[in-house]
Structures are given as C-alpha cells and as structure tokens.
Image (cartoon, rainbow, N blue to C red; front, side, top):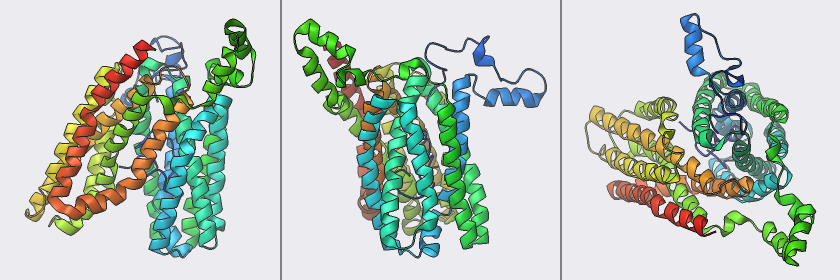
Length: 486
C-alpha cells in the first residue's frame, strides 16, 4: 500500500493527505534506538512505559510497542499524521473534481506542476535544517502544511488551486527531507534503519485506519462530508506540529555549519591557523556537500530507479489487470491488501544486516532481482484464464512487496551511511529529491512505456530494476574508497 504521500508515502501530488511522515514509500515514513548515546539496555529508561507481565493482552501489547521511548514518540506522531493523510487521501480526487469542479485534465496538470515544486523544495529545506536545526524547521513546515491543507476548503477556481497545490507539495516534500534529517539526530546510527522500518509499519497501519474513516465520507457523498475529511487532515498536521515542538532533541542537533558561515569562532580559528583558509572553508560550507558527492549522487539515482516499483504497483498493475488480463477487477483491491499485509509483516525484519554499507548494497541488489522477477510474473498473467491470471498477479505483487521492503531498508541505510555524521539535512534533501522525482515521473513512465508495450515493456522494467539494484555495490565501493582517501 502507498505508505505516505512521504516515507512515503504518493509524494508530490499536492493533494491533501499526500503529505505525511516520510517513513513510508518515500519517504516518506527512523530507528530503533533512543536519543544518541542512550541506547536501551532493557533495564533502564528504555523500558519505561512498556506493559508489564500479566495478561495475554499485555504480552501482545508489549510485542507491538517499541522498547525505545523515542521511537514510541515518533510512532505516535506518525500514527496521528497518517490517519489524517489516509482520511483525506481517500476523498481528495472526488473533492477536487466534484466539489471544486476541476476536470481530470486540470487536476492532472496541476499535480504535475505541484510535483515539480516538491522536487525543487527538498534540497533547500534540507540545507535549512542544517543551518537552523531540523526540529525548528520541521515544526514550521508541518504547520504550514496544515494551514495549506485547510485552505483547500476556501479554493474557488483553478488558479487558486494550482498555487495552493504547489505550496502544499513544496512544504510536504521539504518536511519529508527535514524529518529524515531529524531521525539522524535523535536516533542512534546503529539502530536508525530498524526504527525507520518500525515507523513505516505504523505508517501503513495509520493509512489503513484513515482510509477506513474516509470510506464513511465516500458513502455519505456530500460536500460537508468531504470538507470534514480534508479539515480532519489539517487538524492532524496541527497536532503533529505541536508534538514535534515538544519532542526532546539532543544538543547535537545544533547545526555546526552556521558558525563557519557566519564568521563565528570556528571560522576565526581556522583563519588564524592557516592564514586565510577560514574564508575558503566558509565558501565551501555555503555549497551543498551532497551535490558534490559523486558516489552519493549515483546511489540517489539508483534508488530513484528502484522507486519506480511504486508506480508499477499503484498504476501499472491496475491498468494491466483491467486492460490486458481476464482477471476479475476485484484483483486490484487484492493487490493492495497483499502488499500492505506483507509490508507490515516483513519491513522490520528486512533491516537485519543493513548496519554495514556493503551488506546494505547487497540487499538492494537482491531487491532489484526480486522486483525484476515480480515484473515478469505479473506480465505472464496476460492471456491466462481469469482465476489463474488473478493468482499470477497476486503472486507477482507478493514478490514486489518482498523486493520493496528490502529496497527500502537498504536505501535508508545507504542514505545515512554515505553521508556519515555530517550535514544530514543536505544529504537527506538531495536523496529525498531523487525519490520525489521518481514518484512524479513514475506513473507516466509505467502507463506508457510499460503497460503500453505489453510483455516487452514489463521485461524492460524488470531489467531496469535489476540493473539499478545490482549497481548499488560498485557505487558503494566507490563511496567507501572516496571516504577512505578523504
């Protein structure tokens, strides 16, 4: 299932409900540890709030709740946000077409333009997090997202919709990048990816709950019902902004780049020691280090190619089932259920071994091969009897879900590992921009170049996904050699 219009995660849509936690598909959707330097031991603060022994219900709750208090707080934030996102996501298209009176063509063009704004906003938002602090910037962006979502209720006319969609998309994608940078600051590096996996599971649960609530509005099918769903999403953003403001962040969040840029003590010391090198360092710091990191850019592009799998699931499979197979149309709903259940069940365990960059790259390669196999199995549904075709599609989607959780786990790990402990905002901003670009162009690519060419198109997509996954290992080796030389 589409996790969050973040991690998620259809990013860049400009629709209400399409901004979320960054822990889902993109985004976005995080780690299993607490604040830096305070890993849970099993007998200290990490156990605070955990259900004690007793009834079977308490034991089940203990297994569901994360042992680390910081991840539990982030999970609560994620749940609130994604329930709101699922609520409005389920009604947004009907709201814009039936309540605001937009045509399908107007909506499509508007979302494409908004998607471009979202891609462009990721990089500067990440840099802002490095300069002023991730939490401070995130609170502002999430609050702006809530205000923008609420303003959809006031829109009259296409120009106003287009302007507002661009604003909402920009702050959505910017907040996704900043949120990922915040996770790097509040969670220990050795359990960061496992925590993001946990938050991604929460994202899927929240989207499901929100979608169920949105179904009520769809059944009522009235302007007040749709407005209530949209405003409910806006309220969820307001609550999340307050909770982020109250989140305790380690002192390490204070950006280290700002003093050098402002001519502070760090810059003065460098100048005194090297006779003017401080001014040179200041100029270097003003440039985005992630945009000058060749291996990181290559990994970003490869991850973007792997993210085409989401368009394959959300656009390619429904079109293929309806237009090119004899499978019952209800199979489309079944594919989303299969994907959601498997992601919830497998995402956390898929992170095992990703602490090592080489292993994370190998996991991405495995994911690419599984996704290629998924494409071929789905393609084989063409020409089969109805029930056999449905089984082939569902089997292919099951493979896609397995490849998805592996690709996400490996990609998260590499996005942090190749950045190290520096400029988390800059690196996550660039990485998030790549993901957002893939989410924006993916539907067009899959609907035309894949479904439009039938079996050949699916085979080409599978080859592309396999190549992107397998190319991760040499890219990471290059990055590690470059890091060793530096």
